[in-house]
Length: 118
Length: 111
Image 1 (tube, rainbow over the protein chains, first blue to last red):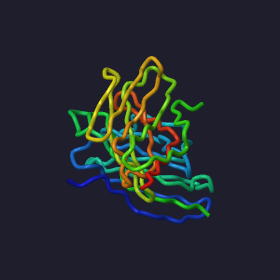
Image 2 (cartoon, rainbow over the protein chains, first blue to last red; image 1 turned 45 degrees about the vertical axis):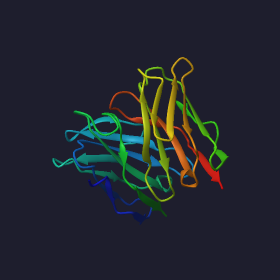
Image 3 (tube, rainbow over the protein chains, first blue to last red; image 1 turned 120 degrees about the vertical axis):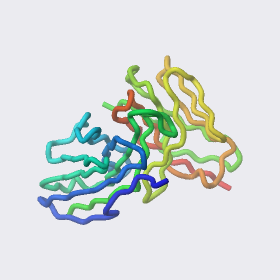
Image 4 (cartoon, rainbow over the protein chains, first blue to last red; image 1 turned 90 degrees about the vertical axis):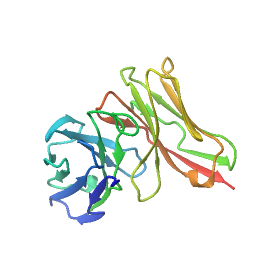
C-alpha cells in the first residue's frame, strides 16, 4: 500500500523566485492538506483540497496557492519567495468519505519537502 | 494565540518505565485528537487517536486519555523502548478539517 509521497525532497531557491511542490496521496484517499513546519515548531496548516477545490485555508498569504488534480494528487505553489518561507513543507492525505485505518479524520503525512530560500 | 500547547519541550525516561506526554487545548469545539511521532528528516507518523465521545483509547503499548472538562489529553507509553525516542506532537481537529498541532515534546528513552 503506497503511502503519501512528495517531491522533491530538497529544494534551494533565492528570494523572489517561485516554487512548486508536489504530493501524491495515500492510495484510496481523496483529500490533501498542506502544512508548513518551521524549525522547532509544530506543523502549521496552509490549506486543504477536496474534489479539486480549496475547502479550508489557514493564515497564509495569497502567495501560497494550490491545486488538486482529478487523480487526487496536489501541488503547492509559493510565489515571490521570502527568506521566512524556508521550512519543511508537509503534505497529508485523508479520506473524507468512509473510514480510513485510523478513522475518517486521520491525516497521514508524507516525508516532506525541505525548502531553503537564500 | 496558541490553541494547542505541549508545555514540556523535552522528557527523559528510563527504558522499561512509563512515558507520559501531555497536551492542553483551548477550544471546546475540537472533537478529534491525535498523536504523531516524528523522527528527523521524516514526516510525522500517526500513532493513535481518540474522538470526543471517548475518554480512553488503547493500542498496544500506547494509550491516549482525554479529559474534556480540563481540555487535556495525554499519551502513555508503557513500557518505553529506545525506539520510542522521537519528537511527539499532539494534534486536534474538528471533523475532517485542519489539524492544529502543539509544538512537540522530544522524548528520550535512556537504556
